[in-house]
Length: 129
Image (cartoon, rainbow, N blue to C red; front, side, top):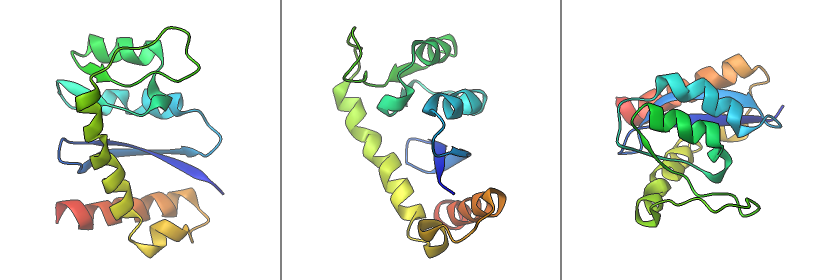
């Protein structure tokens, strides 16, 4: 019954694509699924859950500079631009605005398909209409 939503947004925090996984699944699954839908960009801001070396290499192969801090337990520290990383709050604001819709925040839907369609409908109304 728990789910995890992965999203790609533009620089203004408007969602471009979503991917939903089960709550206990690693963030790497969502990263791999959304990798092909990434738009052309200079930078990608990401959470610590997306710090895998293969993901960073895939971003660099697409010409995107990753701005993802390393996990605290990682042996070798990862360099990232701290000033750019502070802009990640736009992504958190996007998720907060999606949760303003009661149906999305309380997860009344038992079916993941119906819940995902409610998220897409909320995102369309809130950000694109």
